[in-house]
Length: 278
Image: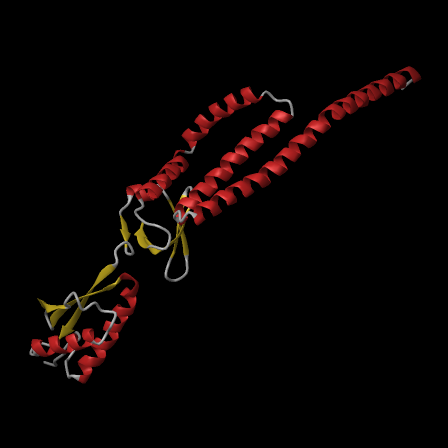
């Protein structure tokens, strides 16, 4: 490379660096502003959503509504912050919003299930088929509702598993809410041998139900012959209790029926096969 070519390359490089420096000198302050807007805006979105959530809690608003509104405010505020930061960099915000609107339609079509979950979440908050703390059956799962957010319902099963169910399932599947009523009926069935005195069985079961304070006595326990089975008589028992006492009463009945039947010589038959040699 001769001297003239070297000088030309040097001048070209110097010109490029000068232009880059001028561009950075003009752009860098705007970039710093945009970063500051993002940092402060994201922080404020968290603060604002938390303030609103605390105010709603003080106003005794239900937990699921608080969770939903908290998520909605945070997401909405952050979207505004991002648009403001981009506008600071010199982009045409109006064109950007228009483009975002068109993109939102396209994304909405692609994310129909997500939008359906959000709409279903709103329906849950309005209609209140269940609330946080209720024990429900939904989409083949049973558990206590721990959270209802913008897209999903969270259940905690009795063996401590978290199940996350899309909110859209609440509008297409049956929901059984075991906690919505103050009282629940426990349906039980026991087998006794043919020849057993039904009156004696009834008396023993009444003694068991009367000894348990959690069984509501204002609704008389129902005891009757339910079926003449192949090797036993089925006795059905129906008792009422507070919903919160359901499992305590259920296990009490199972344990004490076995104990009291043995004490009173009431036979509980089981299937047997007799084999005879010819």
